[in-house]
Structures are given as structure tokens and as C-alpha cells.
Image 1: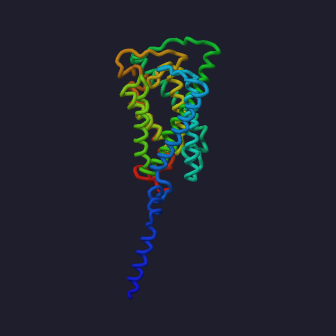
Image 2: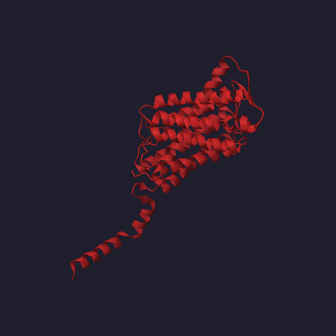
Image 3: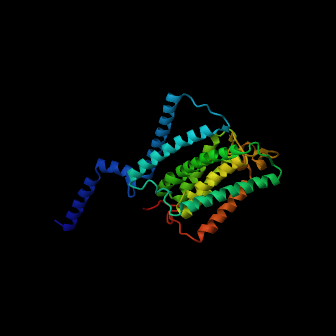
Length: 324
């Protein structure tokens, strides 16, 4: 018998034995980079939802219903809500990191210059909201009342809200630009993932009662700017700092609405007047069309600053799945 025919027959037998139901099932869940990205995302979301829902039910069982304040945000609700969400996020990240055999901080939180980037983000965030509010005041579509609080209460409330918005920054950036972004990069490519998650980020804000279509679009645009900083640095710390300072400056320092929500204690108090497209109306500065050229300038500055200095750690996976 011809040796080549014998070898072909043997190879066919090997291929047939390799394609057992168990192996086919394994290929559904496991790819060349380990567990497939889609299953990783589904498991991550399921763990997060289970922890958040379970914790909320336990708190309700032992302490009763926590009243919701509508469009007004209190320190108690802020700390409680963000702590529950961070618990769910941290649990989901740790479980998935163990399953994928990766360090838990490898999704944007491993950074040798984390403090420097975080501090720079704080400065940029507070400076940007300051410029935005100044422009709205100069355009006569926003007025500011003098501080109603004085003395120690200013510092106590200021520090209290700084803590809340730090938790907000850590949660939202780690959730939408952390594990999910890294996993989508593995599955469909960095910028496809960034577009999907930024659209999701904007859509989530739609549950806020004071939101407008401009506010939803600007929230998505903010998400893309934060993704741009992640693209260059591989780090979430600049975005966390920016997010924290922007929200604190917007909500507490200037007393404007933040995506349709007001905090119950503010240093200044802002009043939008005139055309809603310019003032932002009930959404706050994020609902003003003025925010779009500001975000464009931010994106250009990020590219100018980091683009000349670093090589993206996501290079090679901009619009296609990462191979690592």
C-alpha cells in the first residue's frame, strides 16, 4: 500500500479523534488567548450584578428602605451607593483575574507613576470645569450665587464630596475603561471596544431625570477622551483624577447640575439661563454644546503630550483583536 495514502488515513483518524464533543465544546469557551472574550464579559457582568443586587437586598433586609432623593444627591447615598458598586466591581475583577491567571491590578491600575498621573488628572479636571463655567458665565447663560456656607462646614462638606467623587471616578473608570475595555480589546480591538463602551457610558446617563440628548452625547465623548489617555499610557490614573476633579468642581465647588443631578450641599450655586443648548439647562455644563470644542482641544492636547513621548501598550490592536 502507498505510504502517502497510509499517512493520510492515519492523519484523518487523528483529526477525527481530536474533534470529539468534549474538544468541540472546549473550543466554544476557550480560544488561543484562553477563555473567549465574550464569555469573560458575560461572567464578569453576572458576578458584578449578583454582588450588587445581593448586597442591596441584605441592606434592605437589615436596615429597611433607603429613600431616594430624586435629582438631589446626598453624602449618605453617595457613599453607600458607590461603596456597593465598588464591592461588586472589585469582586468581579478579582474572580476574573484568577480565572484568566492575571494580576488583579493589570487592567489599568499597574502604573509606576500612578500618583503623578492622578495628580495631573486632578489639575486638568478642575481646570477644565473652571474654563467651561467661566465661558458660560461670560456668555451670560450661567449665573453664580455667592457661597451660602462659611467656616468649617465649607471644608467638611468639600472633603466629604471629594471622597464621594473619588469613589465615583475609581468605579466608573475601572468598570468601563478597566476590565471591560481590556477584554473587548482582546475580543474585537481597542477602538471598537472604546466606541462600544463610550456609547454605553453615555446611554447609562439616560436614567438621570435631568439629562438631555446633548448631555448623553457629551458623556460618550468624555468616555472617548478617557479611552485616549488609556491608549497612550495603559493607565487609568489620569482619567480617575480628571473624573474626580471635574465632578467635584462641577457639583460642589460651582454648584451646577452634574448630568442632571445636584448635590444637597454646595459652595456656590449656579443658575442656567437662556438657551438650553448653550447653558446646559438641567443637565449642567455637560449639556451645553460648548463642551464639544473643549473636549476636542483636550483630545488634541493628550495626543500632543503623550503621542510624542510614549508608544501605546495597545499597539497592533487598535482596530483588531489583541494577540497576547
